[in-house]
Length: 540
Ligand SMILES: Cc1cc2nc3c(=O)[nH]c(=O)nc-3n(C[C@H](O)[C@H](O)[C@H](O)COP(=O)(O)OP(=O)(O)OC[C@H]3O[C@@H](n4cnc5c(N)ncnc54)[C@H](O)[C@@H]3O)c2cc1C
Ligand SMILES: NC(=O)C1=CN([C@@H]2O[C@H](COP(=O)(O)OP(=O)(O)OC[C@H]3O[C@@H](n4cnc5c(N)ncnc54)[C@H](OP(=O)(O)O)[C@@H]3O)[C@@H](O)[C@H]2O)C=CC1
Ligand SMILES: CC(C)=CCC[C@@H](C)[C@H]1CC[C@@]2(C)C3=C(CC[C@]12C)[C@@]1(C)CC[C@H](O)C(C)(C)[C@@H]1CC3
Picture 1 (cartoon, protein in one colour):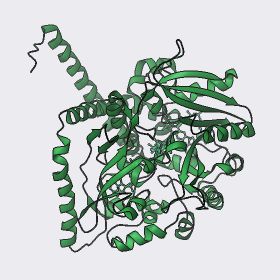
Picture 2 (cartoon, rainbow, N blue to C red; picture 1 turned 90 degrees about the vertical axis):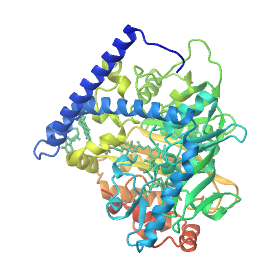
Picture 3 (cartoon, rainbow, N blue to C red; picture 1 turned 30 degrees about the vertical axis):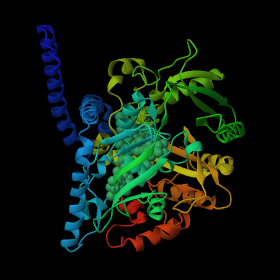
């Protein structure tokens, strides 16, 4: 094995690290168990809410860091030893076999994936997972990076973090990389994915070249724009209600070392809207466009382009653990009232909101952006969303339910100004996140109201946090917001809570192609439909 021998010093160092790691793990497990029991005791609300950070820092952070390390090593080994492609067919065959068994077993309960609800990047745990027939999908590897065809071929449980870590060193990247490291390929194709390059490339689904599915009859099919094209167009947003995704081929583009990011502060909603619209429509100039509003009248619009060199003194590696949270850094340009240019390493740019989970980590670790915390424990941040979800307990769940809003609403760019006013009046929640995207006029679950022309520029408005409007009532206000969005030809992202009735839901999304595919592929008795999987009653 390369003939390397360890010196006594190296052996001792490894022993010390192993001992420290085991002590830490043992301590974290005992403390974790203690807290896990604590969160189930009623009457301890104050401790649970205000001291959740103790549990998070002592247990979840080390557990998350350990989990990431193990998976990083595992994935690297599998990718470079090229063992995954050899096993792919056998793993897909296992899925097909489970579906065939479902038939021979009398098709008693409909099917969904066996991925536990707490693992998903969504606020809620799906209730249907308990009662449906769970199909195990053990597919978590990158199968091939084809630089000639400019595609990456990967399995559905591959995460965004895994993809950027593999592709960027090879000089490539995905055209659209949704921010959070743990988002999966399957979730983004079957649900939706967006990033600040979506004004050029569209939603994540637009970058998919082909998908491989296992259908309800156990057959395995490949779909692309030339092969099974109707199914291909119906797959995005289908939430596993047309079949199981077993692999996808995604476009890749050359990566550069840096993103040259320009910050433009704006001091009124009108100035912000004009600037954001102008930058979003300059598709050939700006590779990335993003906006954050900090109050109704102050925000920052950011534009980025990829480059291989940086002006000296302007490089900023924002992803290092000791660096301030990105949204706080952006806000500093507003306070200083200056425009700015920085060169950010590509991967640091992609995962700029990962460390602070946008601005949601502040509630959990209120001092998380303090320099002392960043230098001491910042390297383990963020805690994994799934671990937070698994351990949150009923009190925290209720607190979020009653006091927080987490929604992404997609509205035509032409209605941006009106939407900002509406959000301000009815919700009053800041920061608000803005990300433009191009929506092509094509049959499918969502498309612009008018199918004339190539498509329309939309904007995703992300509201994550505590609404301050005195009128805010979580159910009534979300329903009003959904009506506003529907009336303005907009759409709701379905990972968030949706209170729409089935009729309202059908009014928001075009079901023509979807219904046809459900009938043609005999899905009705095999999978719940999208509404059944995503409406608020289906989630806890
Ligand atoms: C939705 C939400 C989630 C939070 N999650 C965490 C967390 O995961 N970990 C953590 O350490 N801290 C959490 N916190 C607490 C948060 O860190 C503190 O509220 C914040 O640091 C301010 O503390 P305070 O004592 O000044 O605020 P306070 O004035 O005590 O509270 C701030 C806000 O929270 C509301 N609030 C407080 N307690 C409750 C409750 N039991 N039910 C409903 N609303 C309540 C208050 O009405 C007020 O609007 C959360 C707070 C909120 C509002
Ligand atoms: N920047 C962004 O764009 C962000 C997007 N999100 C949202 O997060 C979600 C992704 O989260 P993630 O945890 O990765 O995914 P999830 O596990 O939440 O999956 C989302 C949906 O896709 C279905 N699905 C996933 N894999 C398969 C598969 N192999 N075959 C069939 N159906 C499948 C699931 O079906 P089932 O219920 O049967 O498992 C589920 O309905 C997306 O919906 C996205 O909207 C969240 C944050 C940021
Ligand atoms: C389109 C885009 C950019 C969407 C970003 C959405 C994120 C901000 C959302 C997705 C999942 C999400 C709702 C989540 C949470 C925060 C906001 C998240 C990360 C947290 C971590 C808040 C704390 C909660 O106790 C809990 C752990 C349940 C959730 C989990 C999901």
